[in-house]
Image (cartoon, rainbow, N blue to C red; front, side):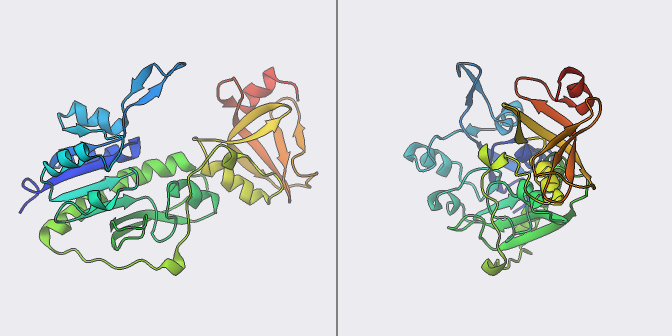
Length: 306
């Protein structure tokens, strides 16, 4: 069997998953179907349906697309089974029931944006930065019952730089995932693939991030606040209150000075906007006030009196 005869079903939804699908298609691999989330209602009244980035790419390249509401739906399972896939690949999708991941004879592997068993869960990129890690990576692993716990196939390590945020790290890992996915498929074809179990003792969680998760706690050390903000930048965005308005914060610097009470605000009205922390302060560089566009602190202070 070679890459043109190996029948692959690909599963993914966001932009992160497009790079790996593109690598498979452009590399001449036989992608016989793509599974992605149903179109999302957007607009003021939810009257416009928006296709996922993976669907948009798949449709543009003439690939068969399936968008089940429920992964255990009998019609979907029949359609999926009819593709006679040898292998399924999952990148940034949702948890699969066993009836799906166990269907192909070669199984299903997932590409996950962390060095498993660290950061199992929905938001590994964000939490690695928030928790001050200096390294992360990509892992391919075989799916099993518990989420992100399957046997590891391959891993690639990536440094997290001081000025990285979730966006820059996302883009680096996205490109890396594409090459790792094709390398994993090649090893499966060659029969040279070996796996190793994960250690639950070394596992950490990367739970889904909600709006309240993103609220800044100024009563933490400056380093922790700095990591928290860049770990949520540019999306979904860390936030605080300035008066009675929500202020999203995207880019900051640590200010090493005498701290006031945590959460206290200082501004010179021109270029400086600082919030005190437990051991110093954080200087804001880019931000977005509720109802306004994203802007530099200088632009913001020209139109806002603190």
